[in-house]
Image 1: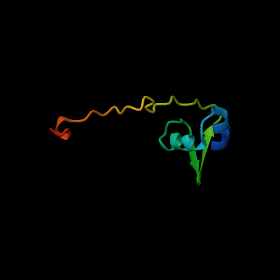
Image 2: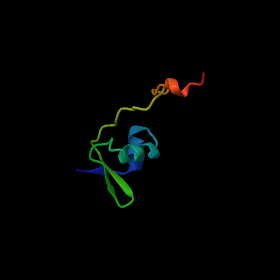
Image 3: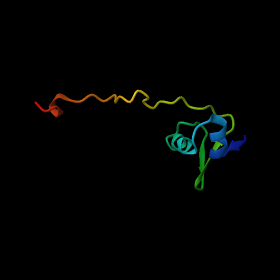
Image 4: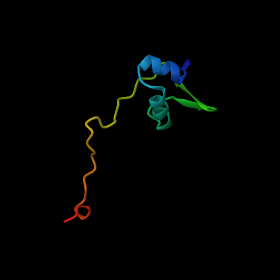
Length: 69
């Protein structure tokens, strides 16, 4: 199995190197391994779906006790 660096994966997927580091550290990329201070990613790994909130709205609702009356 061949592996790619974060830089190579960044160019392949079109996202930032920092985002790929975050995906690796949160186990979102199957087969990614940390070797020393660097991550290696299988060359056949699929790009994970972006699960971040894009609307700008938070999902957590405020409780009634936090609302001043």
